[in-house]
Image (cartoon, rainbow, N blue to C red; front, top):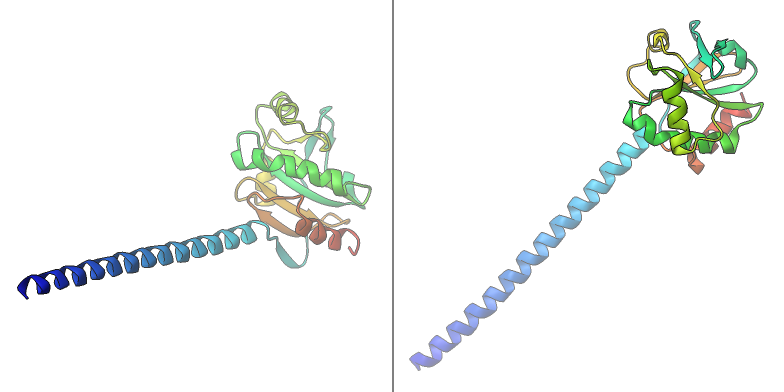
Length: 200
């Protein structure tokens, strides 16, 4: 009888152990799934924030500022009057800027016209050569070349960090801005920009 009780206790203990292992495993899996869902939600929020322009209640006038084209000729925003401009202020030493540049190139290929232009404005102090080398290195084919080696643009426009992108209407007024990198050639972004290109 004693042997039988010991045997039964062992079985009960073994079964309890298995149940404990199963419950623990299920708990761990559940917690991991919850964490994955939470992480995914956080990623979605970050991506949404990255892709969101802060739009102004009314268009804002911009101060005068100058820059140069690839031939060293002086230019201002007035050279693009009548065109909706996406002004991206960037530099080759800015890693997020480098990463998003191909998507700006793709956006210009998709939407570029007399109605809309991506103006990628480098503030590289090293000058034209370093920017041209970068364009060649990553295969930029659709973006024109603009540079402000004085970096005065950042002060004039109140640029808090790179990259910063301004959406500018046909009259040279700021409609809104996006601070930080984003994917520019997405369906959502193209539709957003089209609402301002064709209804502005």
